[in-house]
Amino acid sequence: MDELGERKIKILDAIIRTYLETGEPVGSRTISKYTDLNLSSATIRNEMSNLEELGYIVQPHTSAGRIPSDKGYRFYVDHLLQNKDKEISDMKDFVIEHTERMENVLKQVARMLAQSTNYATMITSPKYSANKVKFIQLSQLDDNQLLAVIVMEANVVKNKMIPLEKPLDNETLLRLNVLLNSTLNGMSIPEINLATISKMKEQAGSYSDIVGVVLDAVAETISQEELEIYTSGATNIFKYPELSDSQKASELIYTLEEKQQLATLVSDSLSDESNTGIQVYIGNESPIQTMKDCSVVTATYELGEGVKGTVGIIGPKRMDYEKVMDSLKELTNQLDGIFKKPS
Image: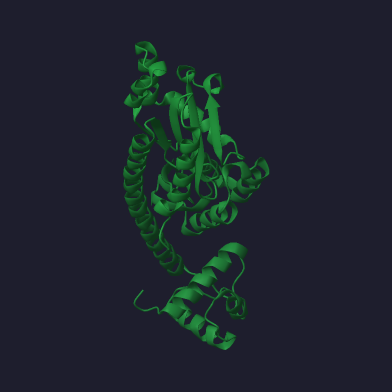
């Protein structure tokens, strides 16, 4: 790193990336189109000569362009991993801080809503319904193991260990990284169809099994995403005679505490792409058996494209619907500002 300035690093990076994509020696004119240095071809040729003298690139034939040397590949891999590791570390720090803050805020929201309405309340953590691949990083840990780090746009990170029958050379590893990222970046699970998978495996050749494992891990990353539900004000139901029967009350409180049935209600609501407003379930309209004597009012809040959560209020059929709806509308409008990531 010390012997290379920023300009040489950018030119070397452009040479390697271009060579990985084309498989052809790279000339100065090609590099001048891909860098943001605004340098002439002559200046780039001089820098390429310096990189060749330093051993980072080689010229396979007279009058041909350059290709990366082993030293160049090593610099690229180390530099790439260093940058990606920092990005992942920064992202994990944000996710931890963001998650702790979110949990505290959502619990407080549920309590305040229960106090202001005198009903039982629930609120869910945001669900990333259309999560997309941000980037994938393959790193060889040793001759027998490959580490795949999968990062989704919603800051969900998954590590997947992939066993190897034989070690991968640097060029193969980099080609797989380029293939995975150039194809999958910005794609969601529904968009990764059979044609995409078949083409990727064909391009990967004898390493198609590695691509298959990575695709499975992307699917697992989304499917294992947990939905947290926070409730408050369960004892408020005793304030209403029609709900205070001991059996009905105990069943309702159990539903609020156990949360599994609430998760079903929420999942059905979030899976409806058109549902971004307020939903009212009165009596038998509720999908939850223990809430047949209640009214349930839910609203979907959005924190960005594909990022949704649900807030709900459970009370007697004679609840103050106008007050409940006004409270939910105000709350959903405020949540975006609370959790928006600072730029």
